Image (cartoon, rainbow over all chains, first blue to last red; front, top):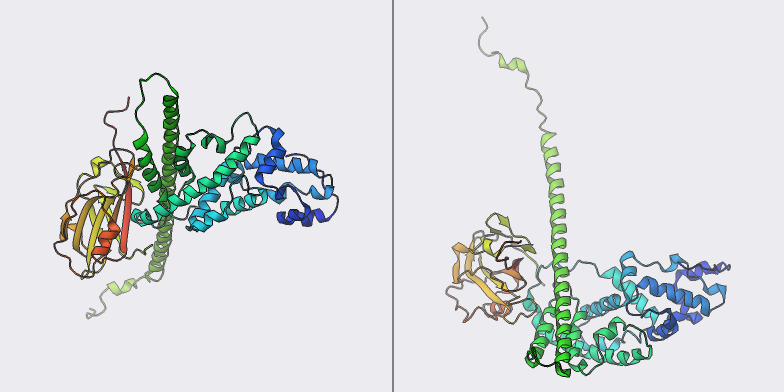
Length: 322
Length: 153
């Protein structure tokens, strides 16, 4: 981690407690992720694919350069240590998690309206949500097993339109991004390729975000309904002289393949999670039963510790002695 | 969501089916040994479906119904009930499918229930609604995928 010139002031400790207090000091945390990206522009790495670790590092070093006051260099490692798994995720993944958490919580369209696109969200909000998201998304949602697929079909339509809306929010941020001319596109850009195919890819690319957990079957329905619509438009253009059309179709096909692959991966993860959950349940059930049986056995043995029958009773005592 | 209130144990051969476990199609060609708890004076309905038909990424035929048995007395097994739709073993053409067995408690004997016109696009919820079955009292599900045709090289 970068060297921190420790604020000599004693209240550095107090300030470290609450990250939000930084807002009063007009730090980088107030800026939107877009603005941060432009600040970090010369770091050379696109925001989306950065690990949270790197992102925070860059932010901190930028802050230190930005503010000369030592009081603000309170970014001791302790104040913002991320959970192990959180820091290894890229910004994009965490963003997906956040979106997923949102669509889990509120199924209304208003929820989508409230959310800003990734670029427009402030870093602070993002981190809060990331932090909050990471704590609460634990694999504890599989208790009902498959959750009766049948359940979700009604909500799927709703979800599809939600994500169509979300895509529209993404567009503005896509247009903002091109300002930051990086060598390599960040993940957002790569997926939402700003070509004329974007109209078609919009519905498709909505789906990777639906890294739904297994019982949440909304994901499985929407790709099919959207893909169904799209597959009709696709005609096999093999063996034709390479033209713009064919190239475009190849690209489309590749995108679709990628999306299908992602969904498959998500399903696989969900399956694995469900299985693990089931195993854990089984183990705890068995342990409890084991414990119960042991106790039972102990109780049965102790009171029945046979008081040895007085042996001499085996001799005849009743009959007349001779 | 529902609360399970009846025990249901499913065995394909010697394999005890637990949620999310894997079963090979070759092991599931015949109906499983299935036992339920519940009161002996209650009747139960069992439905088995595949929500991932024909493929999990494109479940156009969701759900594909594999088995319907009604009027199963509590504490017994489907052989004691009335088989409305004969058992059909899993034959997933593409991908890994989930197969769900749902048990409902009946309010009254159902007798000869009309067979669905097709196994495709079945809707368990609707079916239960039509027969006034209420929420499930037990479920179990397993995964199944096509077995590789030839031996691995």
